[in-house]
Length: 397
Image (cartoon, rainbow, N blue to C red; front, top):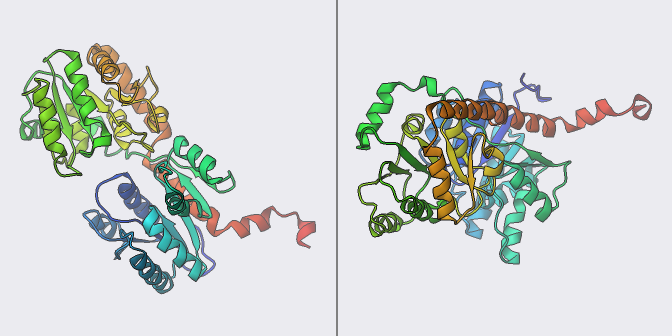
């Protein structure tokens, strides 16, 4: 049900993030914009632009372009002034910051205009120097601070002292209509297999995620080498984030004698079909991820998952029930988990698929994420009304 505004108009929410490229924070922004519009709210997004900006406008929300990805203090100050003007012009009620650099500008603009300020921690940021700690601290200044996993929430509470009165745990969610194994046609799967030139009749082990060092590509290659077998094929799906890393991965594959066993794919526009090609999906991150969307998407598709045992993966994978957890930075342990997943019988795979999808449908859906986020917005907007309603009549008198 849509919240009623005291201004006789729909409430308006402005989400602010650096860019609208691929990534969990970006897709979450689009999903919340869609949910706001569906609920009858007014939805605005400010970013420096990117491919997903079209998704914002297609949802019926408004995208506004500012250089909010910049960490230059002068640009950030100008952004604060520009955001304050946008807030007044569009009569924004809530400013929701999703990243640190734009959060400083958004926080200043919200204070200047007297509007509500909400933040989302998408990971447990490294501490570093005092200057870095102060830079990070803006994310703890929201009237409500959203953490995308219990791992992140514990970090926010311990490091920034955000108590339960402000801290809200809202895990990311997957769209079960999109990530549904029964909705992926054989034609889609076959088309992708042809495009990737996958060999017929051999199992596929897939590592989805951007080609960046901390995603664990080199550990994955070492784990495959440790298995000492060539009766399966590996696909690494993701765009290169730093020049030269793809060549480093290719060199590691060649050095370990794994030529002909790997395919490195720059991008994929049909991830549900990609997961259906995979017999095992691996997430080998060397540093803890705040959530790990790949792990959840793969389980929604009923795929066996192997993830590193830290961060949000400990919450989204039930070890021994919906997948496997291996110590980070331990290729032999990763190899052993992949070996077990490949050895599943058809019946065991079917049981695991059912359990995995039920697990995701219970705790990690897009619908739950959106409903809980809109509930936070209502909580902020109508906190005074709620407090008045809870106040004893004698005290009000």
